[in-house]
Length: 279
Ligand code: C2E
Ligand code: MG
Ligand code: MG
Ligand code: MG
Image (cartoon, rainbow, N blue to C red; front, side, top):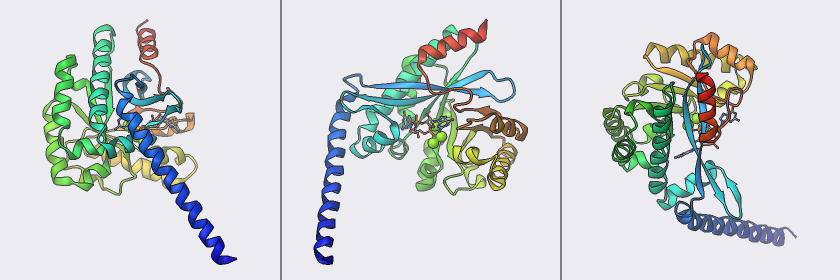
């Protein structure tokens, strides 16, 4: 019976939605305690000079080791943290932890490497990012030019006047600013030019297809050319194959990141790689 089926489908749908909602509430409650319980940690993914192959920096990527659910990726819990407001404390912790670690590398390694932190839209909207960054730099003593912030185009488009002021305040501190996942957010480079930006990270969806699709290759080549004309550096993310690497080198991309050259790893492992570079 069509009517009965419809009713059952509705009940099922409702039940599933309720389950999702209560799971969200449960995760949010756990997330509030995660920092105090030391369940959050950072992995570091290296970035390499496309020409020399030397490591020039790392990107901090957060992980949540949940006692029952196992390892939870950021895509799963950062939106929940934004919704509950927990993102505030988490961002402060990420900044402090990443800067502290980068200061250790700065003091112990013969190669200066930068550390990049992903900023959530919430922190930009609340305009507290400059204060948080200033605190982290002061507390850890990391030279400002070794800290990079990664933010997405959509964060700028949503609130451009306010975002412009916040980015100018951040830039005043002497840090570097990069646009993450570039090419996915429908903004033009000329529009982005009003913001004090140092680098573009080409989204990995374009990198992924550049050897199979002429149009994706054309997009990558065009982004690199335009970025250079605006004096921006270009980072390619998600580089997984030698063919991608070769095409990017040929197009003049300066910085390479991806599984081909280095997966996200522990701070200890980065330290070992730095020692190997020195010898
Ligand atoms: P993102 O900043 O664009 O980071 C790149 C993501 O791609 C990372 O996933 C990284 O592990 C993955 N990746 C790197 N190289 C490759 C590759 O060659 N192939 C493939 N398939 N993937 C690659 P992850 O660590 O799961 O992070 C996902 C997103 O979560 C990040 O995207 C970033 O937007 C966000 N995120 C991570 N850490 C933080 C944080 O501390 N705070 C905030 N607000 N967001 C964070
Ligand atoms: Mg990033
Ligand atoms: Mg990215
Ligand atoms: Mg991404």
